[in-house]
Length: 598
Ligand SMILES: Cc1cc2nc3c(=O)[nH]c(=O)nc-3n(C[C@H](O)[C@H](O)[C@H](O)COP(=O)(O)OP(=O)(O)OC[C@H]3O[C@@H](n4cnc5c(N)ncnc54)[C@H](O)[C@@H]3O)c2cc1C
Image 1: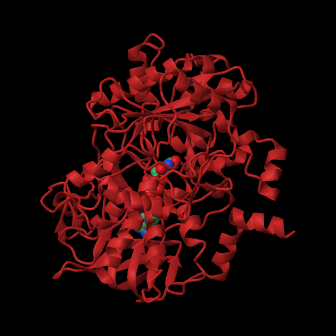
Image 2: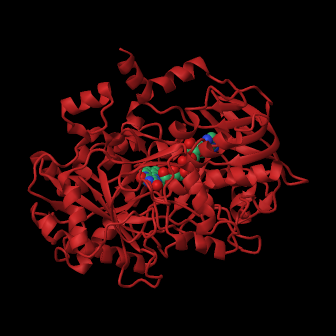
Image 3: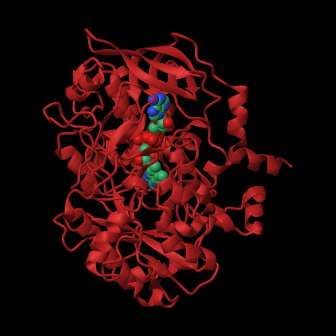
């Protein structure tokens, strides 16, 4: 029936069909006004905006392929890290974190598909605190204060959030859909109520004040993932003859005229063959927080010592990759409850729900749950030195745990050891015992990591050392968050469903008394779980800032016709998950570029 056809189209069949009908084989030496490397969150937004001008030819080059059913069905989020849509990076072995991961290597996934990381992420929509952006501006980044970036967040957004229809903080006409998750477990209502009972007011964390508790806001449309590609590119891809999209094409380096330090094109590989594209105006790197710095370095822009060591001739010395911030979490605590059938198991969605979702497009089923994430609470820590309306911690309610997919995708994606899974979660899985997890995340870590290159081969992984928990105070912040989550669990609303701490001992932490501060400190360093908000590897700042790589116009310092437009430019770890900011950066960059070339 047309309805069924429509549903299949929405669930990825249209992408695959389009790939066959419009393969877009590159033309050797083709010339474009703008070459955008990477079709992720920022890259798609930028490509869509620049190609609004029919006189500009825009190339969008992407290493990965297309989204399919698994990407587009939100409950499957945890599996995507085990697919070819993940660059699949790992950190170097960590001394002070990730003790629960094979070889102490933290998994560092990144999207490799049209849509980038927005096509494999957990779809949480979260912009940040006004102090974040005001701090960017105070560092000399003119044009990036909260008042100046809010219009770009709004420009990208199309909100359908109950109770926020008239909020000045939400727009209803942008490309990117933001909606309430249509399926909610009993546990999330109990958590929200218990948080209020514990003194955390209900709030819209994207509104006037972040502090408090909210049901999560999601980048889905009618219960389907709304990635950068779905939101910005799919609606226009066959309507703009000036926008050329090249999937399965991996860029090796930016071509630079060394005398003028001017970017004139890119070299890339498509189907094992090398191609060159030339630009009439600019090359823009939107390859994400790991790959944009990698591409700069492969092109001779980076720290002189690293480039010399790998034999890449230096074009411009800059502190590329010298700084790497991230948001580290503790994967827990987990609480068991006495409800039944409320934990969201991606492996056990009732067949009736699956059919109504697939065939009738009904979003009110577990399949539209964004990997089980249901609520966020933004908190202050007693040890905070930041202003009182600037949160330090987040609690993320997940209606499940590593057991939510029976120890398959999530465990593998995060590189957890079998021993961790078997000891902590196996029994929950076997008994199908209802439970939820409060992931505790720290927003403003002091530990700073680094990224550099192993060799000059574009196909090699960059070496990534996030140095999580190098500063012991970061652990103390997470400990504060764990204590607060336990306090919330003791409130009447959660006690009404019998919430109690899962009391199985974390392997490696058995020598500590269960739930003592030292036990949790050990648990934090063992169940270390990044939420993948890496930033600052191509840090934005004025030329006088020795840590800066790009200017507030996002131009690479000392270079011509070369910008970086993605989360790698974010100078400080924000009070947010980073996807919304990537869209904002893409939108704002489009205005900066139009302002210059029009
Ligand atoms: C598992 C996971 C879950 C997350 N969950 C959330 C969440 O729920 N909410 C949230 O706000 N944030 C989340 N994040 C973070 C957020 O999704 C990212 O910060 C954001 O999407 C990054 O956008 P970007 O534009 O900077 O880069 P990306 O979206 O990563 O885009 C980079 C693109 O460039 C391509 N590329 C890279 N190198 C090359 C090359 N050499 N040649 C061609 N193409 C190349 C990549 O394949 C990719 O498509 C999550 C991240 C991960 C990994």
